[in-house]
Image 1 (cartoon, rainbow, N blue to C red):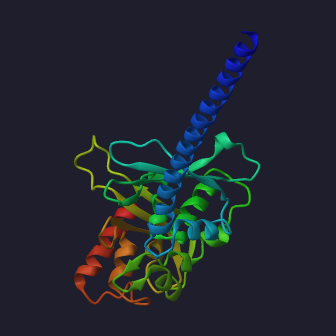
Image 2 (cartoon, rainbow, N blue to C red):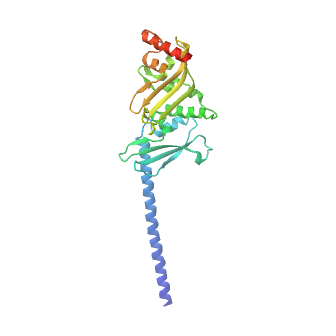
Image 3 (spheres, one colour):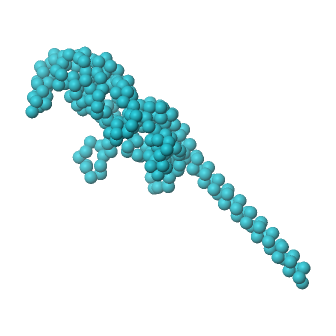
Length: 273
C-alpha cells in the first residue's frame, strides 16, 4: 500500500508539472501575440506616416536631434480607445533627464488605418523637420534653455516650408535682404469647442524681420505672420506678409496703385497712435 501511494503521488506531481508547462506555454504565447500586435501597430506608424516634406517620423527625429535639444527615447502602444489605437513616442531634452520628465508625441491609428498626429504641441511636425525644429528651438528660447541654436532659428532658409504666391518665404526674405530677429514662432492652434466663432485649427508662423529694402522703416521692420488651415494654402495675415505675398522682392513698397498709398498711410497713422 505504501509503494502504491508513493506511485500515485509521483504520478500526480508529473501531471501537475505537465499542466503547469502547458499553461505557461499558452501564457507566453499569448504575451508574444500581444507584443507582435503592439509592434505591428507601431511599425504601421513608422512606415506609413509622412510629413508634408515626405519624411518619416524617425527621419525627422534624426534630423531634429542635430539642431535642437531632442533625445529620442522610444515607442510604445497606448490604450485602445473608441477612435483608434494611440502610438506614443517619448523624447527628452537632455540624456540625463528623468523618464518621468519625458515629452511625448502621440499618433492615433484609426480603424480605417488612417494615421494622425493628435498632440497639439507636436503638430508642427506635420509641416516637416525644419518646422518642427523651429517650434522646439523657439520654445527652448522662451524657457531660457541654455545653448539655444539661435543660428537655426534666424536662418531664412528654414522657413521655406511656407509657400507664397511669389515663392518660398525663406528665399523671398533672402532676396529682400531681411534679417530675422525675435520673436520667432511656429505653432499649431486647435479650435476650441467653446469658441464656435473661431477660425478653426491652423498652423501659424510668426517672425520679426528687418529688411534692407526701399520703403518706410516702420514697415520694413515688422512682424510677418502666415497661417495655414489643414488642406489649404498658406495665407498672409500681417501687413508685410501681404506685401511679400503680392509683390516681388525689391518691389514690396512700390505704390503704383493709389489704394496702396492710402493703405500705407492709414497703417502709418495707426502705428503712430
